[in-house]
Each structure stands twice: as C-alpha cells, then as structure tokens.
Amino acid sequence: MNDHYLKKLDRVTAILTQLQSKPIVRAQDLAMKFDVSIRTIYRDVKTLENAGIPIIGEAGNGYSLMDGYKLPPVMFTKEEVLSFITAEKLMQKFSHQSLGNHYQKAMEKVRSVLRHSDKSLIQNIEKQIDVFNFHAHPEDSLKNVIPIILESIAEKTQLVIEYKTVDSTVSKRTIETVGVFFEFNFWYIMAFCTLRKDFRQFRVDRILQISKTETPFLQEYGQVNDYRKRSNVNKSIAKLLVDKKIMSHLVNSKKYYGLINEVETDNGVELTFETEWINDGFPRWLITFADYATVLEPESLRIRLNELLIKMMERHQ
Image (spheres, rainbow, N blue to C red):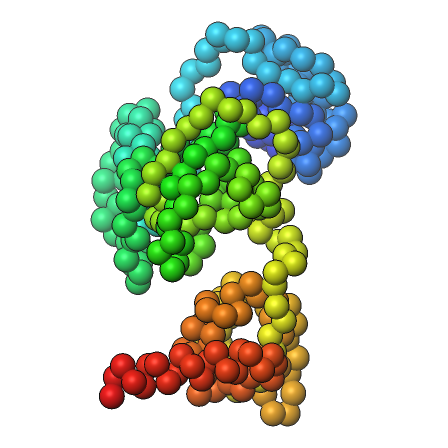
C-alpha cells in the first residue's frame, strides 16, 4: 500500500472519529483540519458511505451519524494513552475542584476500554510523571460551581450570584455567562452583568451563592477570548522604565497587567501598559520589582506606590 492510500486511510478513520464525537461535522472544518480540499473530504465521506457507515447530510450542510448507530469501541494508540496519563496529572494539579471528580470518573471509563497491554503501560509509568504546582488552590465558598456555570452556558440561561469583591463588598448580580477561563491560578467567569449593563469578569472563588434561573438570553456573545481582549473605557495608560536585568522575571506577568508596547533604550526598557487596576492591582504588582523600575507616568501611580510603601514600612517597623 503506497503512501497516498495510507494517508487516506488515516484521514478517513479520523473523519469517522469526528463523526462519533460531534453532532454535526462540516466539510469546511474537516478540510481545514486535515489540510486538504473540500472535494477530497466529499470523496472521503463517500468512501465511508460505501463501507456501510450510515451518514446523514450532504455537501454544504454538514454530516452526522444516523441516530442510534453504534460503532465498536475506539482503539487508542500508545502515544494517545501516554498523553492521557500526562493530562490526568495536569488535571489533578490545575483543574477546579468541582471538575476533579467528574474528570476522574471519565478517566476510569477510558481506562476500562483500554487493551490489557495499555493498562499495564499506564500502571508502569503513571508514578514516573508528576507536576509541581507552586501555588495553593484557592478555596471556594461553594462546591460544584463550575459545572453549574457550564450548564448555564450550554442552556443559555441567566445565573444569579452573590459576589464578594476584593474590598469585601457583597452584591447580588444577574449575569449572562459568555465563558470561563483559568489565569494566574484562578478561575474566572466572563459574563454580561445586567446590573452594570456591561461585560465583567468574576473570580469563581469569590462567589458566595449561585443559582440557575429559567430566564433565557438570546444574545449571541461569541468566544470568551473576544471579550478578554476587547478595549475598556476605564483603562489607564502607565509607563515604566525597567532595568534590563529584571526583564526575564516579568515575561508572563507584564502581559497580564496590560502591556501594549515595549521599547529597549540605553537606560533600560520602556514598558507601556493599558490597565484598569491603576489604583490597586497594578501598583501592588509594581512593588515586587520597584527597586528596578521608575514610574514615568502617570504621577498618580507614583503617589499611590509611595503610599503603599509607607504603609508597608509603618507595619513592619
């Protein structure tokens, strides 16, 4: 069998897997995934139909398997089995506690369909992989909160939450959830807040109460990253001059705090930020490397930084 037919066999098998895992599969998406023409996908689907696979749909609309059609259990490659082990270790360290038990049960089902040799492979290697997390998991006030949030996204129904802000102010909000994301060791909700009439992000561990409603929302909000990247009228511009020798320690955090421009000069690296945390979060982050940085603007940031430093000195005298 030549290379062309081997590639086709692999691709047709992968298309069948896609049909098993999704309700509708579009030819355009398959063509992009496998880097082939749409016409090639049409021929591959015809190959599956000729092999007796009951595929519903037609070119241009999307394909699906006939409801109730059962296929033999999927066989995993050795490389896929090893990736499961690594993913399981990552989930144990970084997944939200309300997802952990569900993932563990799912992995038990995956293990149950593995071949004996693959089960032995897992047993021999799973203790040889570990992930070290330098941050403690935040303690949530509620259990099972992430699944409730995900259900509201899938069902497109509003949530009512009782939320505690960083200054311990508690308020009740009705939100329409766009999505969830994990960043700097915390889980966040991105949602439209009906109280503020704008999009807000809420840290999951600060939710004191949560309840689903029967109230639907019809707005199509798109992807969660679209809103994390969007501009905000409340953001302020801050400029710092930072010593070059400290820059390697700011690789990840500078992006989180809104870096929009970076210019290397003879005196150091000039960083420009667009941040909504100019009065609290940003100056507190700046304290961690303030001995290697100079505030260029705004003056209010310099004043706020000095206030925080004075409070620190008074507390530790």
